[in-house]
Image (cartoon, rainbow, N blue to C red; front, side, top):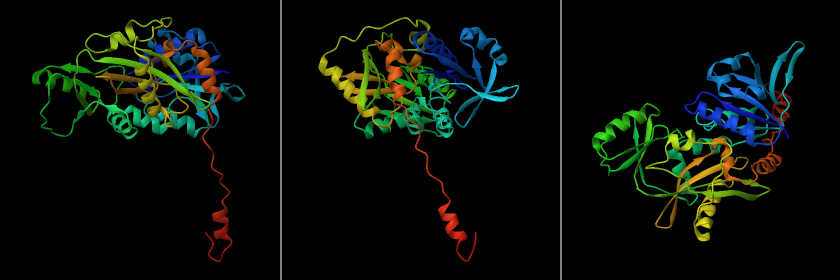
Length: 346
C-alpha cells in the first residue's frame, strides 16, 4: 500500500499541516508520496529527503515536480508527455480551510481518487462549529449552550461572564479567548473577527474535565484509540497543542471508570456513523456532572492522532483497505435517443 499524503493549502493552519506531514513521514511505516499544496493551491511532489521545514519556508519546494490532479490521480510532465505518480490511497492531512471544509474531498471524489479523510458533507458539518452543534444535537449528542455573533449584524445580548469566544470556522485553538468582563469581551471579539465573520460564545466552565477519543470504522466495526485527558492550563491553547509535541510521544490512557469510557465511545459512535466513514477523526468531549458534551470534531486531527493508537500503521492500512470509490452513475443517453427517435428531434 502506497499513500499520497496531501498537506499544506491556503489555511491559517498551513504550517500545522506541514508539521503533521513530517510526523507521518516518521510514524506511518508504509511507502509514501508527499503532495504539497502551496498557498496558491498548486501541487508539488516533495522528495522524502526534503520533507523538512526549510523546504517550505524558503520556497525551495517550487523546484520540485509540479503536479496536476486529473481523472485517476496526480500527474507530472515528462519529456514524452506526462506520468502518473503511483499511489493507492491518498491521505488528506490539510488542516482547516481547503482540507477540512470539503474542497480537497470534493476534488478527490470528482477525479476518482481513493482517500482517507472526511467526505464533503462530513467536512461541511464539522468545519463550522455552529453546524457541528446542530448535527450533534440531531444525533442525540449534547453540546454546551451557545450564542452566535456575526460581524455584519448588531446584537444586544446579555452575556454571562466568564465566557469563551471561538471563531466558528477555525481549529487549533487559534483566535480563542477566555474573557471575564465586558471590556475584555470587546477586545476578544475584535480579535476573533480577524479570523471569521461568525463567533461562537459559550459560558466558560473552569476546571472542566476534557477527554479526547479518536477512531475509525473498519469492516463496519469501530476501531477506537485510547482515551486521552489532555494537560492544559485555563484552556488547551495553541502552544500546549503543538509547540511541545514530539512525534515519538505517546500519552497514557485517562484514569476514568469503565462506565465513562463507554459513554464517550457511545457518543463518538453517534457522531461517526455513518457520516464520517472513510475518515479517522478525533472527537473532543467535555464531562460535566457525569454528562458527556461534544466540544468539537477534528475531522483531520493533527498528525492523524497517531499518538493515541498502539499500532497506528495497522489501523491506517486496515482503513485504507476498506476505502471505496464513489459509485459512478451509468450515462447511456437513452432519454436523448428516445427524443431523437420521435418526430420532433432535439
